[in-house]
Image (cartoon, rainbow over all chains, first blue to last red; front, side, top):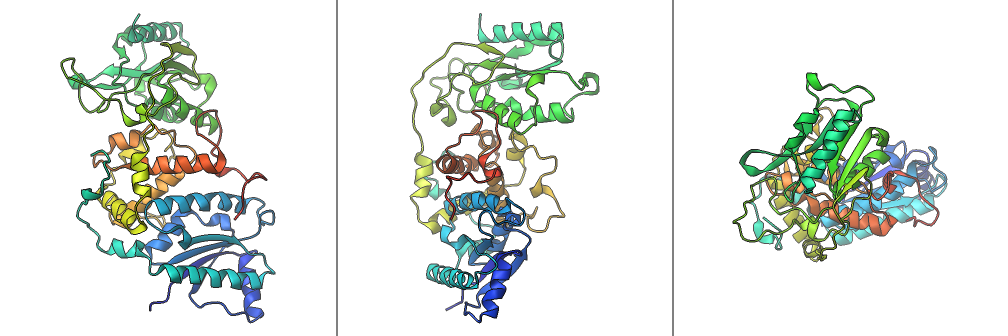
Length: 153
Length: 301
């Protein structure tokens, strides 16, 4: 069984500190997590998330400050609007929407951080390996128009 | 008076009085097809036409005309405060509304000739239509279009029509009914055909960034390459950038030389934006709700 690889974008003001607190409190969370420190969850553009999946991540976790607590006032408002739309888009083109998760962890919530990472890892493990990357490796696919569903052309 | 004659009369009036410096409209091109036309002198207005083959969304030219004048020949440089007139269908008017909301176009310097539209024929812009051909069908976007009268105009041509609406979402639902891996397979087969000619981006009235993120060789996480993953990121990223802005003119799909069903992505996101924010782009000049901050009633994960 291959372990899922999970990439987490952590806001440096809240969630990254929250992850620190989880470590200091000696809470257990899975080692599948690769943390990337970003200045704000609003920094995580859809291109970054798609690139992460392209590079072989099985799940992407975006963690930011609670709404109203953003260091930049409204950075996380933008994330809160973008991520659900991106989930819809990705699920429309064939990536389970559960593989991308947005949540809020404040600087003192080490316990919440560990719980979210545990939950998310279980969800991704349940889903199995991500086929997003595997399809890419057969770079030039034969044009398959049998799946055109009466679409024109 | 026919629609074309009315357009010509109004364009001549505005050009000779000096109200506008340029009229953007349609003319008859080679092989009987229609093509965009730029008219600068009153005596040239006889070239202007309008019929059911005028499929182009002329609002694509507005940001360039207003912001850098890069479309202008040296002999036709516009004064910095010159006005422009444009001939538009109801669907194109929505793009004007988005452009005004995003400060790409100034309403004061724009004169809009709105045309009541019964629909545009399928295949328009690609081939000529001759009388002896049997039956023409309307384009998909026209068959399910509920706005036949322009929302904004300075001069309106035509009377309101109320054609039968066909609610066509089968293609969309056909894909949503598939399993996840079937969807991935379908879309990869589509994106694999893309040749990255950027025709979809060039023709889009709302893709007006001066430098495109997907055509930079120094960006770190999007590529210009030909791998299917990079092509997929281009199309998904473009659809995402148009979320809450796309007015559904389907020009991207019409100009695609490889026949990618690009409009499906845009329609799916438009559907999602409407359910999430209750917002339809282009009804009034406004920013996309994706770019604003949360309102209190909106759900937070």
